[in-house]
Image (cartoon, rainbow, N blue to C red; front, side):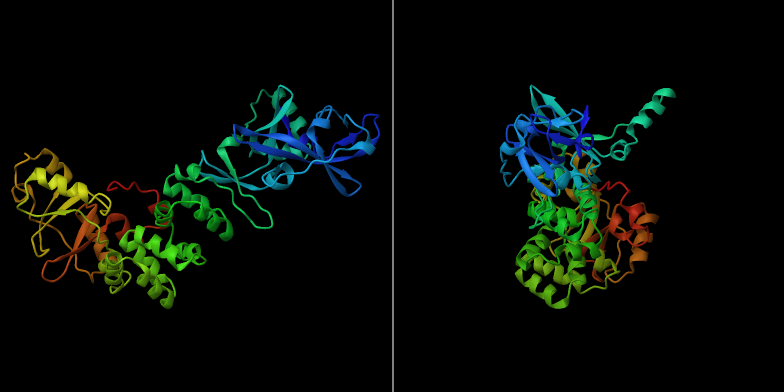
Amino acid sequence: MAFLSEVLGRTITDLDGVFIGKLEDLVARELAEFPHPVVDGVVINRHGRMVTVPFAVVMSLFAPAIPLKCHADDLPQYEPAEQDVFLSRDVLDKQIIDTDGARVVRVNDLELVRISGTLYVSNVDIGMMGILRRVGLAAPTYSLASAFKLRLPENTIAWDAVELLRHDQFMRLRVPADSIAELHPADVAEIISDLNRLESGQLLEALEVEQVADTLEQVETEFQVELVEHMSDEKVADLLEEMEPDEAADLLAELPEERSRRLVALMEQDEADEVRMLLTYPEDSAGGIMTTGYAYVSPDMPAGEAIQSLRKMADDVETFAYIYVLDETDHLRGVFELTDLLFAEPGALVHDFMDDRVKTVAPLDDQDEVAQVITKYDLLAVPVVDETNVMLGIVTADDALDKIIPTAWKKRLPRFYR
């Protein structure tokens, strides 16, 4: 194994052994057909002036003094391409996204490997050994470990499992959407929480609207506000339409009033009406934390028809843990679990197997009261009804417990109703 830290600063000589300068950096070019970039250029510090030459003129990179195949007066020039990576300048000590581990980590060193005469960047070292190697303590550490028969931990990531946070004059973030799109929204949320505001905004720009909306729902409302602060109103309105109505209403409530009005005006009519209704309730009331996306059927519907009806709701319903039974005027008549429907005969009517004893809360009930109802009756969600028993929405367990259980603990709770 060879590492970038082992060659940085080494003396470079010409064909006759004449001193040229010190190795300042290596330039790697990414290949479309291969996941690991190839080292294509060498940056030489010639008395404070940086000269870049093709890697092809290097005779032996890992020699104590690096000899070139040409004379000092005949150094060929290497013209870096826009997408070239300067390994020390652009990668070393920088943050990267580990797409396998779904985290942001710091690069301590880079592992290089030679294959058929070509030098590639193989792995990224994010462990302590990378730091020890750079400060000259790797050799004594290995000797000590060998004497005591200890195995030193190697903490590396394959290059093709990371994404660089590229810092140049335009502060571009190079993130292929397909790599991040495979991550769970909670993982993306954890990644953006480790980035600065500019980087997190650029990461979100690389994602589809649906995944950005899902990611926003995984972070605190205050952080949501920061993330959408510099987005266009049109983009934020699209995100709000994709978010759960209660999450969208929470975000709108935290935004400046004027912008909140503009955003609601840009939303589709149905989604806008839902969030307007939610915004009329106090923030910590049942109405303020409920969602209007719930599963429902009518009492006279056969079980087979009910299944078909629920399938059509799949994209708009937050949980299918409970199916609510509503009459033609939206009055709540009963509830059943999805398993009750699956085991019912296709011709059985809903009112024959529903439970008409439904625990409910009122829209102005305090969040603490709602949480107590959910915990007392071991519910995954509780319906919110008005004084005439008209169904308004549901409060899910995680939303009810949001301010009772610290966020760090709440995020660890399994979301059984998803």
